[in-house]
Image (tube, rainbow, N blue to C red; front, side, top):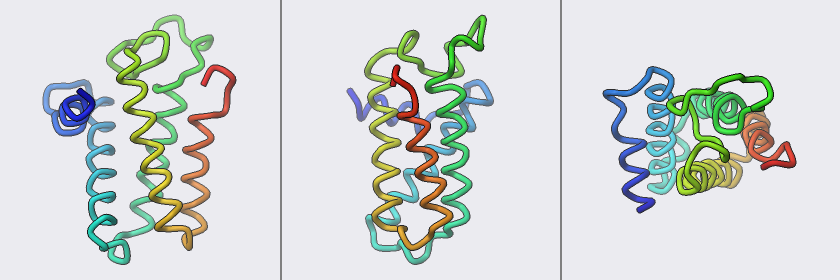
Amino acid sequence: MTTLLRSSFVDAASDVEPVVGVLASAFRLCSAEMTAVDAGLCDHLSPQVSRSLTRVLSRWTRAYLFPDLSCYDQLSSKLGVTPSRGSDVDVCWTVTYLLNYILQCIKMRSSESALVDDVLALFAGLVDTKER
């Protein structure tokens, strides 16, 4: 089920809202980066691309994955998955995917202090409130 969810979410971004398309593209880049690291090509990856990707994911996490629902009267279900509106499988898969990306960045790219700072900001976005 999770593999099917991952492939449909990450690989199919043609007929979706623009925000979801941007996110799907970011997840595709994450997948490509993680595959390159697994293949031993870590030295050939740009830390600046990883930082930009991490910043996009961090902003999305705070704004759409776990938004402060008190700030919104209405939240489109197309824009994000929240614990109160999305399925548990979607939330668990997304958080697990982001945690795997965070762990891989910290393990393999720890010499890049600016990247580590951005990765830790992404992690903080996942865990900074009681509800999470």
